[in-house]
Length: 421
Ligand SMILES: Nc1nc2c(c(=O)[nH]1)N[C@H]1C(S)=C(S)[C@@H](COP(=O)(O)O)O[C@H]1N2
Ligand SMILES: [Mo]
Picture 1 (cartoon, helix red, strand yellow):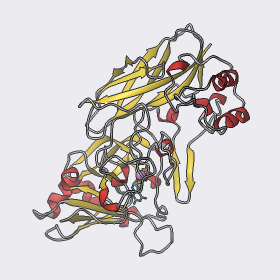
Picture 2 (picture 1 turned 180 degrees about the vertical axis):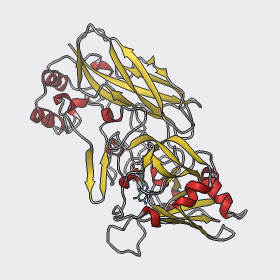
Picture 3 (picture 1 turned 45 degrees about the vertical axis):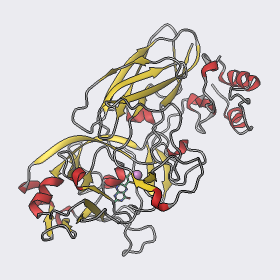
Picture 4 (picture 1 turned 60 degrees about the horizontal axis):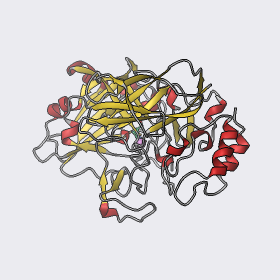
């Protein structure tokens, strides 16, 4: 077991790296003492990496049974520790909740309407939920939704916003109508390029005239088979937090494109310009920038498909096991619009990698499950790292990728701590 105070002191002591970015000798032995075990493969630790128990404020080696992690109370933002995401289909309440405003109260689903308008429809049209359920074919897909800022906590200099670690991601099963079928029913003009949403949540200021967030997707994404206007999640009414009674679901894209409590869609003849479509919201610099650099607004582009990424969901970080046994490890991998081709794990800080078995997605835009069994050469502290590669050969970086002002798209390899004895 580790002593918290000792760890904290180590972390904030200043640089623990020597000029050539190797862990300083003294620090290494202090860490080993604190861990009560030797750090195997310590020589391979890349620059800037500290063993996990020294890096995380809630010490994973104490084995404390933590629940969902509250990142903000107003608005209500909550994420899952990775081990709570072990299910193939994520269930409530293991689903992260991201709100930009106040969750709407007293919703009467019977009275709910969806209006589809905007300059690129031939005529505005309004539906109630029964119209959607009864007059169009319904479809069910498992769809991966990851917050664009998932992993933000890893960036330095820090980026403002919820300090998500790994858990702002889920893959639930959604049932609803294809947005395409509704757009066809409404009738859209040839100049349609974008679809934007509006939801029923309230602005933090309490001002009812202020829109919380109104994002959307290009018409091509809106017309994909899997883009749904959903009324059910995992076979039941959508939980209030996740958009009851009607939600737009655009899998594989930043989850901010998937509007909750949707009561209005606008078909636009230009890129939708609702709140949080511009500035540095859900946008990243078009060219590489130095950490901390100021980026002019015209240099940003909207985030579309999310990058390749993977998560270890079993065991939880901090697991201890008998050296004589193999350790079963598993998790999920996803790659936005792409399929994941390969998942590998490393137990020596990325020096060598071994392939895992990987399942096909149940449908496009669903995450994929991987698993493997690991043997460890000797007792001591290890990290298990996981790295996914997409069908186009693009892999997760081992280190934090390109810094950007709002801390989006951190798809660095996931790591957990394990101890063999
Ligand atoms: N109406 C509305 N829709 C919204 C949001 C919001 O604040 N209001 N947040 C968006 C963001 S930023 C994310 S990451 C996802 C989160 O979905 P979840 O709460 O189901 O995890 O919802 C998106 N849809
Ligand atoms: Mo988000």
